Length: 600
Image 1 (cartoon, rainbow, N blue to C red):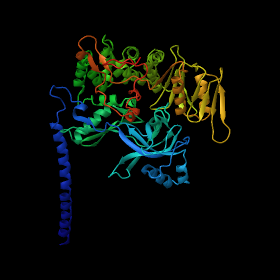
Image 2 (image 1 turned 135 degrees about the vertical axis):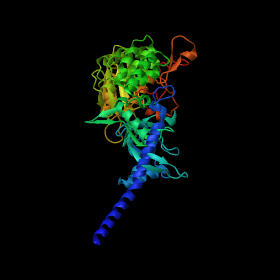
Image 3 (image 1 turned 90 degrees about the vertical axis):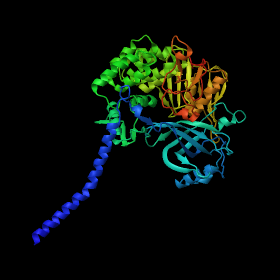
Image 4 (image 1 turned 30 degrees about the vertical axis):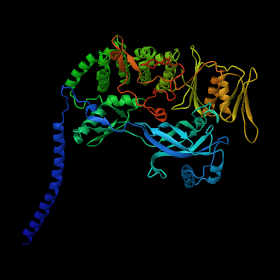
């Protein structure tokens, strides 16, 4: 009797286990069937028989800057600060300093050399952990403080904020920390002339990102499937990956409707182009069909109206697209040459350098993109030679654009290698037979570039370098650079009227980049600077290229896929490409027409 009973118990247990496992197995099978059905119903080819591209079934979900905000305390003001004791901003900063254990917070904030400020920044799409970005600093509207000139922002947090019912802003996760010297908006502003220009400014590359912000790729309706999403992610990773001992793809399928996309380092300075190439990748295509499509794209590449799209698709194919793109270099049409050459540069080919250099000189509409393309050709001698040649042409934007391309390509290039002057800013002197020029940066990084190494100020003159440094060139043959101090002995340096010596003396006395920036602007306005002074003089994107022949409607062709959207000044400080448009407007060498912006 015991043996049948034992068998019965064992049979019952086994049957229960089987029954319990059935729903899970069925649900798993159902999920697989759903994906299989979705993949079967999903058309990998378009109605014209061409393969569906990533852009046909996806959209970019977060390709807009995210605003971050914070509140901080500025120090080192020349008595122009204020203690706005009843303001919301002051309370937030006071509470934060108290939380951090800062001693005698009340006395620090009551000192007229300090002021509470709002800090604003934008996180560009694809920004990575550790990246630096610019921020804007503003005095609150109701403040009694008068000026931020000479100020230094103490370490402050930046975070996303939300306002509920007009109360104190709710703080989200900390995204970045920021500190540094403030460069006021108008270096020539006074309390009687443009007082608003004294109350706001920027800190160049003052904020450091704490975490990366990848691109989100969303599936369009009808393509939401784990199978399809995984397939597209694999195709992207086949084209874009990095090798750190093993291959790591840029795309990760997170859900059945979303892919997270990291920016490939090769395209870090032009995220817009990267996304365009990603969207030009075929979702599913065998070798035979791909080779046939390459031949068709080679024919389209030679047609000016179709060359842009063809070049992007050939770039998306990868190395197999190089022979077809090289054919484009043989075209007599500059537009065809341009699209082919830029794609070849991003594919690591060594043939387009001379074409890119020539187009950079001759065609303003394409200049921004050809310079960027030359900058990614890091191991190409002809690209280096071409950029060095562009440093000496008459066009100011081409000269500085070539400088940036060389620096991005190799910051240790012997032609442009500079020094970190006083740990304050990047300082470069370029020997050139061309006309002398001084270029200052008001975005991305504090930087002085002197085209010509023996530029001298015309005497006599009297200039300010910030609120406490005076540059006195009244006596012929010498310049006295003096730092005025409230207590103790004034410090000074006696130098020649050479701009290089004067800048170094200002920095030795504790001057910052904003101080040098102010001094050079004053020198230019006073007419004692014998050369051009340019600020962020870069080629502009989205200029219109006019094709030879035909009427105006036929000739107008945008040089990139989408027209530019209006941006705030702060958004323009952190663009998606090193060669974005000027934050401060056109330079003094602007020669615009109705349809084409040209700065020579």
